[in-house]
Amino acid sequence: MRIKVWGARGSVPAPGPDMNRYGGNTSCVQVTFRDGSQLILDAGTGIRTLGLELADAPRVGILLTHLHLDHIQGLMFFPPCFRSDAEITIWGPSSPEASLEDRVARYISAPLSPVEVRELPCSVAFRDAPATEWRIGDVLIRAEATGTDTYEINRNLVLTDGARADSVPNLEIETGEVVGAGHASATARFDDEQLFYLMSRGIEAEQARRLVVRGFFAELVGRVPVPELRERLEAAIEERLGKVGA
Image 1 (cartoon, rainbow, N blue to C red):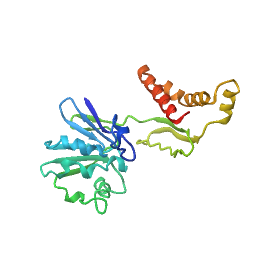
Image 2: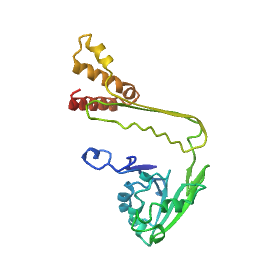
Image 3: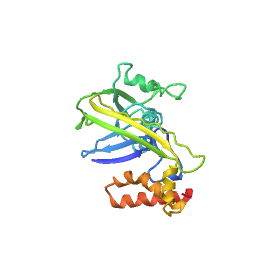
Image 4: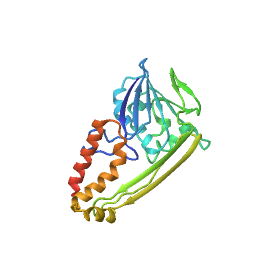
């Protein structure tokens, strides 16, 4: 199996030179299986560029993990959608509210789109993804998140005047078999007591601030199992601290 990530951003596309390493497109992953068949996971803006490479593909399968905008906003720019010889099958979560086609059509319709689903020249079929184990061709798909027990922590440390952090924890579990789930969020500036403690022991203010920031990241960086990656993260933190004068 071969996996290629065409988009990994959340919420909105993020263009610009800072995104050159991983790209700025929203969710889209191309999975190629041993027999050469393919499945596209999600249809964020990354699917547009992927579609250019599928110019001659007679059949395309797309699996939408959920219908947030950043997972479907590339559909109306997917080149195979505008080929009369293309057969596209779109799987997605079922809902008692409306069919998958009707829910996707809310986005691919006026005034948000110049074309509507029913006007696409391709042959497109919408399929509800079963909640249990199922197959797409020879590929077995099943829920692996059963019995989930998770906790999300969102911490933000504001380093400079005028900076702000919008701390909005978002924990989404796509399964009904949840043992436990929770989240917490906090945003704060430097702790003056920590700075005072360090400076009272002869540490200069700038170095004290660096120690506080290193401590803030220590738990996260320490969990990275790859030494080379840990070193890169530590170097990136030091570089950013140098830029903000911490």
